[in-house]
Image (spheres, rainbow, N blue to C red):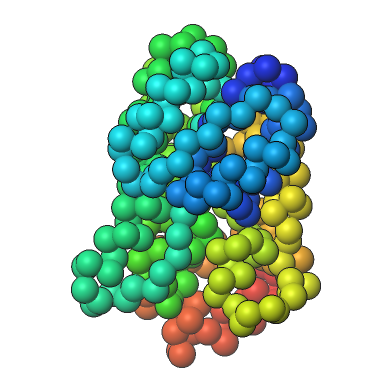
Length: 279
């Protein structure tokens, strides 16, 4: 992996103008990588170029637009002739419940899942044919693993990203013997513009949240160790707590408990006691 995250190689990042995408861009630029950045916010992208000391290509466009991703690929290859890391970071969050109008779901699915799928379709064949070590990093979510109630459309999209990335990893292993790898980055509670927008205006970063820079530091160590699942803690939820929440969710099927039993009135106290017991 040291030949992937390396000076002179190229990182392609979607949703790169703010939050986690920008933090990844800064961290990789500091390691001497060149950048190809996509974001819907053209003005913010322009601002990024003045803060990063590296060779940067910027493309303004919607990650759900195949033509924008194709333009990003073609301009990246034309200018740099390399794609070492593809980071599918772009995402949105908008509430949509299980029986809401499908039109309310469509944008969530198109961006949070469709954008990842389309970027893989556009970039991965080139990465395979290029014959160099490279990696695809897809942004998942804990909401796509333990699927808490309240934001069904987002959880469904992120669950799909998890499955897609697992399938990608397996197929790339068969196709390239591991030369091109896939990785699922799952943030904890991270203070980003997307999360800030859900809070009252002017609120300070909660103590529970990590900064995007903390998350990226944690991520890069594990990417370089070639981890597939990179599930990040935060200042309130440890990796041990995450593991127990994931195990409880899986046991809902194994033990035939009610759906989402962690939040079910007959089971939530049992979950809390089990979590506290630590065994």
